[in-house]
Image (cartoon, rainbow over all chains, first blue to last red; front, side, top):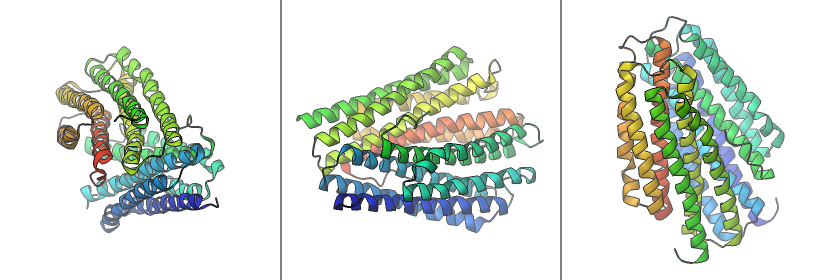
Length: 215
Length: 215
């Protein structure tokens, strides 16, 4: 990408990468807060979600600026449409990290996750962080190959969610604990789904193939 | 809207209205299936979600066509960006109706919602259908006033969700029933959230005021 328009597209992409980096921090902190009942970390996640949202406004403004200044060809427009959708998904991933953090705050000082599920949730948190970190690389390098494989990483989150759900009726938890655990597992699972959508958008931006994107 | 470009924007909007109409049918059928354990209706919701997804592809193609053919001014670009986001939210609303339908199928022939929560879920279903119907009007008429009030309609869904959640620990349900009910209530609640987002996009498309849109 060399001409002024493409330089602007690069800058637009930098804003997406910045959003993705903040999402890594958010889900990492939220997962740690969940494991350790750390309310200060949970509060930081809630507070800093504002900055993820603010980046989405910046991206909107940048796109409108770009599109009024330049005549774009179809390939560039695909990239721009992709950027709109990616920012929506990243914003939502930030929200989901915030939901995890809020669950910690809602039940504190009681741990929201019971002892016997702590390991599964640690695994979910680790998988979610790994997925978010991979997303930063995929966006920064427009890495098609890694993007195409994101579904496999997401399968891990789905598998852990199923394992958690399968245990809920049998571990002797009360309904409140079971509901909290089910919703938390769903937040992580949705986090992974949005990462897959972002990855598909990266593929779409380059190939125009949208048919991967929806279920 | 009179010139050829604006006629094309009108056609683009028609596609969004068509999507919204299909979402009304989907959530209406899914809610009825939930009340009556009607697996045929639930299967129809799952099958017809494909058509909602297909409309999103059409909208993408139409936008790229439009943007390569015409030089748009900032106000029109806001409308186009809004259309991208609205199609994402409507697609998701279709998915959520499908999730409700799939819950019915997963537990059939056992009703997924226990007798004592049936009334609350009937109220959630009715509120969701009303919200989706209102969305059709908001989109078709670009009705700012109704759009600005959508948050109030959504408050009703949030209130019923809270009522359902509050009952779960006390009604003596097992964890599986409680988890099913909590997730179902969340599907309806998210359905309402996406309707609010669509409404905010309609306001944004006209006023450029994005600051309503994210939480």
